[in-house]
Image 1 (cartoon, rainbow, N blue to C red):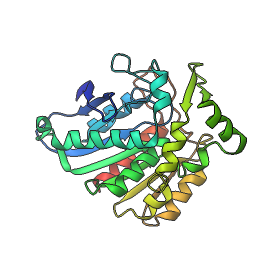
Image 2: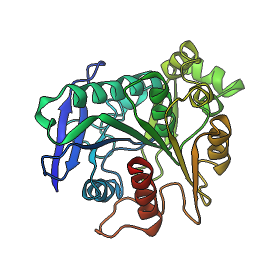
Image 3: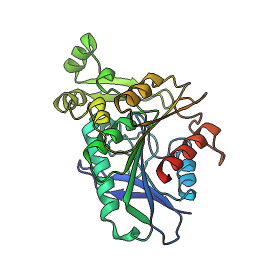
Length: 280
């Protein structure tokens, strides 16, 4: 199994997209699986590296990356050394980043014997689940899409009322990172970009119009994103497949840092379910 870590893909917004690639070298084009992390996430969080290895061993050309404005840098892709970039992030930038990763692998001649660009699959965790659903609906090159503990409504997560007015007045609001204890900024541009692009950024609209296979995976012990959001996605696209994993939490019972090569049974169930979904 080959791992190419921290490759820099140019972004559209003056910051690179730090990217990892995992695959088994056998001169056989393999289904591509691109993974998008969630809010306050990054490609090396928790057990994502072990997950990537498992997918590569299962026969995938696996790509994971940091959104360009997730708060990491090319020099330090783990955690959040660039809080200003984090504050300047928005959903439109994340969609652009994913577009650049897709374009990069499709146009990259280095991997023509290992990556099957006609079999291009997206998987997003949490907030990233919404990003991949929107991108899958608007990009005809996508073959399948997987929402992993994914959100179903970005608008519901926006500040409103007095909090929104305060955000507008002060130009920034903060969220505390429970693990790193950083006060992470969201500049008001985040709300402005959402309102300017609200139709595009409505996950319900995208899910309703999907024309490709969709898999929705959610744990019934998820306290971060309600299981009702998975039911919403499935209701909006009755042709989708819904997999509820018993006793699984939002991160499928992983944590950060992850210091073992073992993988929890809930995340292994995710890997098995996704593998069967793509390969059937």
